Amino acid sequence: TLSLSLCHSRDDNSLFLSLCHPGDDNYGRKLVIFSSCQMPPSHQLDHHRLLEYLKYTLDQYVESDYTLVYFHHGLRSSNKPSLRWLRDAYREFDRKYKKNLKALYVVHPTNFIRILWNIFKPLISHKFGKKVTYVNYLVELRDHLNFDQLIIPPDVLRHDERLQAAQKGGPPPPAKTPPPRPPLPTQQFGVIFELVAFFHLLDELVVVDYFLFYSGLQTEGIFRRSARVQLIKDIQKLYNQGKPVVFEQFGDVHVPAVILKTFLRELPEPLLTFSLYDHILDLVRVESSLRVSMCKHIVERLPEPNYIVLKYLLCFLHMVSQQSLINKMSPSNLGCVFGVNLAWPRQGSVSLTALPSLNIFTEILIEHYHAVFSSRCPSAQVLP
Figure 1 (cartoon, rainbow, N blue to C red):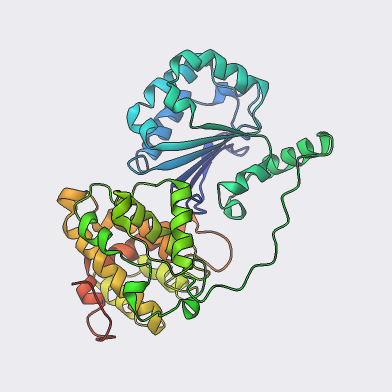
Figure 2: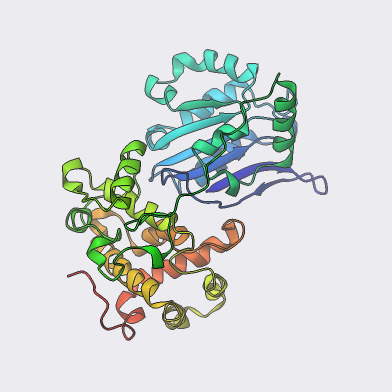
């Protein structure tokens, strides 16, 4: 997730950006958060440069499916951009940006937003309009995002509390969740490795389905697309019940790709474990010539089950990268997709400063697969 909070520094009257990386949304899509609560007055902000920076930032993400969350609170008459700028901005964000935007959540909408929507409605396509969802209270985001990992400005949190207090009776409280049931013997999603049935039989584990292996290598943008939410939930249920899943019947190789990322993301502890997280972050402090050996040393400290699955997964991703001229997924691109799904801290979310280390570490594992996994665990099964 890239969170952009436009803030104004009282010390030097300059514009600065606060960035964070809490993770993808509940559907495996990249999450971009824009908060306007501290935007400086319009006369102190070059809106043209702002637009160019937003485009530059989004260019790094729009090739994949992504979700946008806009916190509207704090946009006042003194810092509102002009209607002309908003019109130009909508036109500047051409089809490249709109095609892969799967959802736009407008949090704490006001009458200004609703009036603005009616003004721009003739310019907005029907398809784009269906992607917009108004969110009146922060609690409503929980159904769509990993809410506890979002970095929300304190002003927005206080505003939400005031809205709830002013609303007669407040918004409906979130339903009390029943105590978690013990996992099924066949459970695969959201459980620790020790509870995954027949762990050593990789064919029965959600790692690389054969349909994904045979069809995904030459699919452009593999691992960059999302899939229908209900379909993913249904497939997870089948896996957890120990029932067979035949991906060929869905006719979409992006479905098993999303399932794979979901499996990794829902592990209570990441595949690379909490204990190795700080060692991974230290990678950028090491000379480039020593990084492959350092990555090898790190992964060899993994518990045996984690090592086997990581080796199996990275073997496949290495094969994907070898077809990058066709599928457009180089080791660097795959590293950006899988880095945050393989490692995260025990407390809090992945920070922006940690991203380069995670991405580079994963890129090295993919590009130098044979060197990293050359010695340990000769019995580990790999792809043919």
